[in-house]
Every structure is written in C-alpha cells, then in structure tokens.
Length: 251
Image (cartoon, rainbow, N blue to C red; front, side, top):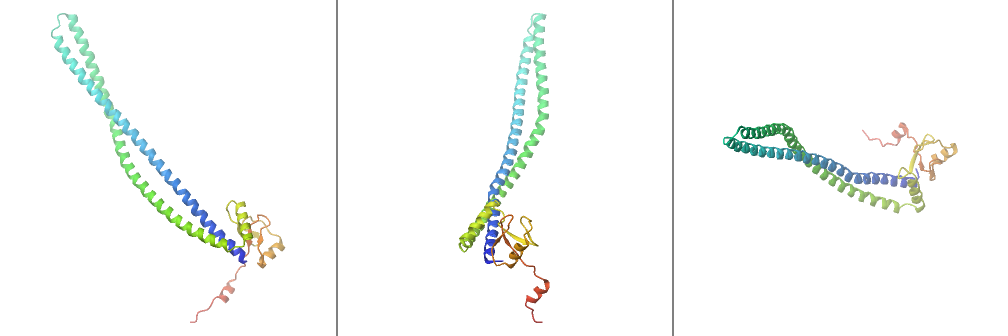
C-alpha cells in the first residue's frame, strides 16, 4: 500500500465515523419528536375520556335536578287535587301527576344507564392518568439520555473533524481533489476499495491481468477501471512468515 493510499484510507475512515455520528445527531431530535407525539396522542385520549366522564356527571346532575322539580310539582298537584270541585278537575290533576311521575321514572332510568356508563369511563381515566404519568417520566428520561448522547457525539465530532483537518492538511491537493470527487460520485460512500483475487471488492468487476500485476507492485496510486475508486492490494501473509517475523521470547 502506497503512502498516498494510506492517507486516503485514513481520511475515509474519519469520514465514515463523522457521517455515522452526524446521522445519529440528526436522528435524535426525530426520535424525541416521535415519542413526544405518542405522548401527546395519549394525552388527547385521556382528555377525551375526562370530557366524556364530565359530560356524564353533568347530565346526571341535570336529571337529578329534573327529578327534584317533578317531585315538587307532584307534591303541589296532590295538594291542589284535594281542592278539586269536579271529577274533571280531579282527573286533570291526576293526569298531570301521572305525567310528572313518568318523567321521574324516565330520568331515574337514564341515571342508572349513566351510572353504568360512568364506571368504565372512570376506570379508563384513572388507568390513563397512571400510564400517562409513567410515560411522561420515561419520555423525560429518554430526552435526558438523548441530550447526553448528543453532547457526547458533538464532542467526538469536533475531535474527528480536527483530525480530518490535520489529515487533509498533510495530503497532496490533487490527491485530496480525487478523493473528494470519488466520494461525491458515490454519494459519500467508500472512495477506497481493496483488490482481492483480481477483483475490485466494491464493484466486483474483474481487472485486466496487466492492471492486476501493476497494482500488486504497490508503487503507484491506481484507480478501479470500472467504478473509479482508489484501489489497494494487501498481499496475503503466510503463517510461516508470521512465525518467522515474530520475535521469539527466550524460555
């Protein structure tokens, strides 16, 4: 591997780390927005249940007031009926009393229905309140973790960007232009690829035999003739070679 390829490989590693951190930093606010949206949805559902329960209770109070009014009217009609002079007057009072009594029974039946409806509503409100409280605590904890993670990512990004600036400062300008051009071509993807068994590991296209031989010498910067990426070749190292080059410790 040439010194130039070592530089662009280092630069590519830095850019890959920077890209991943930038994606994570950008994703964290979206993640927070999603969990806050879910929290808002649950809160609106709770408010709807509370509104339904309030309406139920309000209707029950109205019906109870109606019953009191009808009962007072019945009491007055009974007193007036005692003073009736004719059968027609008596029957008229009785009809009004019967009508008021029917209204009382209708109101009582409706109150019973409302009481039956209020029980699950009340239970739903209490359950939602407890769940929402727990969810709020979880969201706040998640937001704290996200803020801490973002701060750590921003710190690491600053370090990596400084390293990148140092690396690019040591690179030949033409080499850097080639690197940036290739990286733009592949939308920020790999600009450097390893050659393995006569193929580019990025595009998998086979190389010409002479090109392959020139690349294996490792004495010049070369580009894949198919995808245009920088190419490098790492010769295989045998187990015997590793043993031969590893310092032996004395017993």
